[in-house]
Length: 151
Image (cartoon, one colour):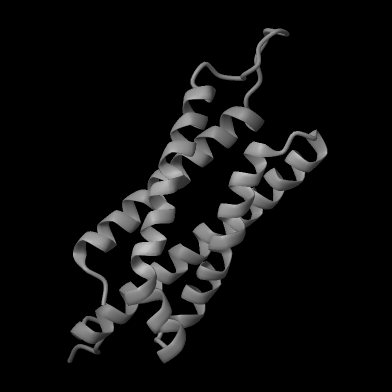
């Protein structure tokens, strides 16, 4: 069973990483600049990259913090929404690895391959995580009787 602190820290850290990653991707790939000498498409782009790189370890810590008392027991003992949880869990390692490897890759083709893999893993993780949260919320509503037929 996760503590309230673990739940809040996990949600906040994942939301921060997802928000900074989406903002960075939007600035980098969806925006353009009229300055041919610009290294960024938006003035905040370098700051968003810094923020993303700084908050990502918080999410990694949150995954580790919740592993022993939530993730692993659900894998071993089963859980009602285990499928979405396992799907999200399996994406954590490649998402984290590609994020770090992308930063140290010196060859452009390799860096781009890590970037694409990071986008795919991260996007799939966020979708899996949201499905997992929705499944858990549905389970809680059923347990409270909120979905029971009214007479």
